[in-house]
Image 1 (cartoon, helix red, strand yellow):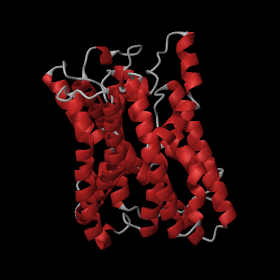
Image 2: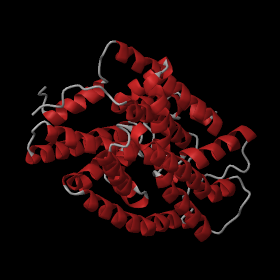
Image 3: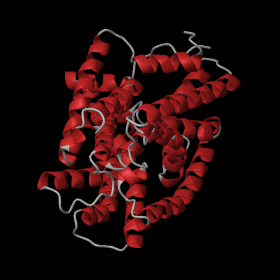
Image 4: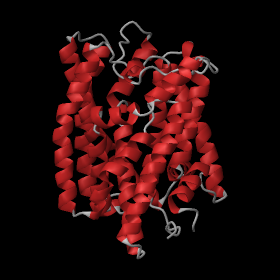
Length: 384
């Protein structure tokens, strides 16, 4: 059984993936300048404080949730399409396991060579742990989401309080620092961290519930036909985004120096910021779906390029990460030692813009992303 034959793509999911790749690159860039989630910026220049405010309210633990929801959505689409083509359930389960396993492999390589806090390994783990739900009823998926919600209401605050008490609230501590490239110790640190990264994200961040919510959204086809679900998507966009901003506000005020909570309160505020990111991710996905309704009728070259990047999300996720690391890592070009949070955002936006041009070029020539094509060959055994 080969991969599905190429069908007309829906604009909304690809548009959302392409735009979120820029936000993920921005989140990664902040780590290289020591301005990650929870970092105190009270004494920084105004532009860096403004960048921190933006990332805390709209970016940190918001881009990742949306991407996780879209990942689950894509998994649900793949299963339903394969079953509709007559593929046996046993074979589809095998494909899901292969996809999860190869995501782990791709992620481990990326984590080892580039960025230890990467997310592909987490998605691979989520596929292996929750993929069986795609062969169960909608009710089973909803029940699993409720179970995961209860689980994360406990584990996320505990993890964030532990980080705050230990004095490790910033993203550098969160990811164990971004190791260098120049010593054997750097490479040993990268290697030792590999198995812990996806496990930490799975327990300290609401990864599994996000993927399961993506399964349910995929079953409902919310992004395949957003016009048919306009009212629901509008409510999700307004309520989800609004509550997401409110949930992030205490941390935003703390890192700006306007609040001075104790370690316990700070950790709980960080937990609220992370948990409210679930609503933010859903809200962002709904916003892009609503935007896609308009663009389906009259899309611009820019929107088509963004969608082309989203269609090749694996390739450009890795490319953006590599470009950001090359420019900012102190052992490479080292710009991260000379710019603050605002400069890191600009570097990420520039890297994304370079990728956007390449994505448009690939789309014009009807070529897949190289890593996306490699993943398909790995999962499907090279059969077309």
